[in-house]
Image (tube, rainbow, N blue to C red; front, side):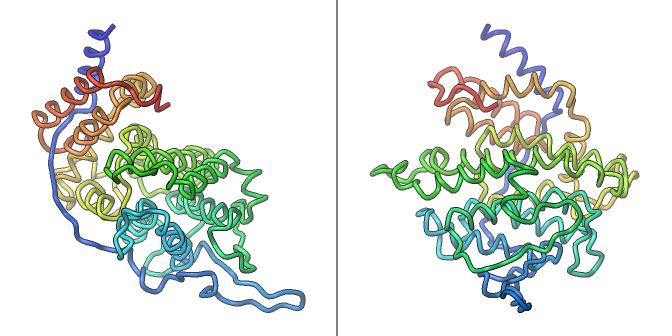
Length: 359
């Protein structure tokens, strides 16, 4: 059985066309216009009508949606003792950082403005990664409950009641994440705050919520795929969304440092064109082209099989660390990536699993 698993992993290795690279970057780079995004509900526009007074949030206005993330960062940092004074170590920072990359690469279809298009597939999927955790954080009392309304567009839910009807599993998983977060002190107990403890008490829960928002949003925004500028961009977006589960199994850190480092290494700074199928003819960095080649050539028809094997490799902390290194080094050196993969496989069998499955 072990030999079968080992051979399966070797097959997985060649399917992915693994390459490698390593970086060490601790620079703090906030998302575009972070400084002007609202940091509390009281900074959103105040609306007075004949019957009520409330704050109006427009999630299709870039600073407003960014503000939802900023508020989440502010209210959750006190529950993360590993955070620095700059908040950059907050594990929620992957969300606004990815949103900022989507803005700067025009994947939100802003076209030089701050107005997000409801036709954008990226923006539509991201809606459920911003509004959902915000509404849940309000519901459980993490955010001071000042009267507010979220501007409704098309069929996007704009209240907790609506979102529980439209995307219930994501709402439930974000509720569980915030519940674990507020009770994280009991998880840590008197233990030293090591990376192993951070992974156990924090990262595993945010990855579960993150995946739930992505996977449950995909069928809701499927019609927006037709608005993407090329088939290559469509394959990239869907490939990235489906590849998330393999990344999540490694419980990779989702703070600002790690997210920015990987965005700079692997993600294209613009939307993709049909000509990007031939990387030698485009203006993208070599490492980005290699990463795209790996993603676009990935055998997603094998994904369920690969996920089962990958789940076994990442069933303990020791295996997950080297699985992270494997994914991080896929785009430069086959030799280095294969070395990390071999260590991950070895550790998966040398150390006891700390969970039954990632699936």
